[in-house]
Length: 101
Image 1 (spheres, one colour):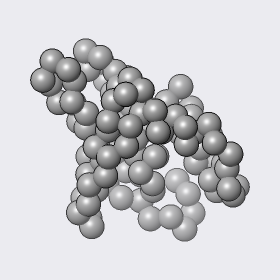
Image 2 (cartoon, helix red, strand yellow):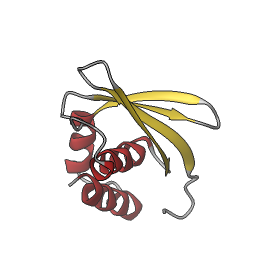
Image 3 (spheres, helix red, strand yellow):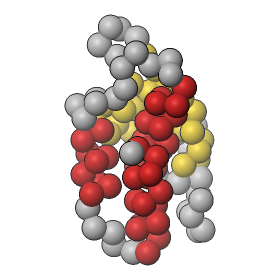
């Protein structure tokens, strides 16, 4: 985890076209890290019939303070491919890229 950045427990979910919702709980410092960790876990667990594609919208619900955010997988990919603004940002992006593949 990154020094100086608060980690939060989040529930990340997406709706599959068959009307099924998949969700996972992760601990992350940023919205994009939560999304990357969730994608890795969806792939690892094997329960999802379909993995989130680029058009998939991931909903990230932070437990405390209770907030909800939405990000598309394509936006996550764009962020991963963009240049880092700091060494901390580069570390986070490299780790997230490894998770997402």
